[in-house]
Image (cartoon, rainbow, N blue to C red; front, side):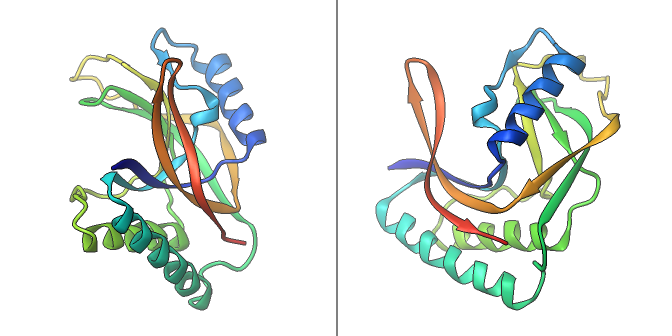
Length: 183
């Protein structure tokens, strides 16, 4: 069983930009997530068998065709990260956007449905696309951190991938298994 998830790919250039922004603007005393691991999760799958993985790969091909057929993707795809906040219980500080474009919501919804069809547990909560910046971010639970950015951070999105989460002596790394081009 592999630990898998679908995510939007963030370019190396944008990962560096996000890491520099985090270090210059926030510089908090929490566990910084390596910029190489920055991504925007579409659907978390968890432990996945080979047969489930093969079905998910096939479904992702179909979902991409549906996305393009519905003309939700026309040109380059951008996301504007415009605030940061913290998930209190998992203690994760993240960057997010107030507006999620239709192509992103469709992709996340369809990949989540695909995971459900494979009997992979999917949380029933509103989808919030985000980039995790810190782990072990401890704040007073009465205090909401949500802050608007003084300047939006644009991300150009060209693809999404099925990733495997691999634990090593140096930490967790996310390795793409297969990638689908959106534009």
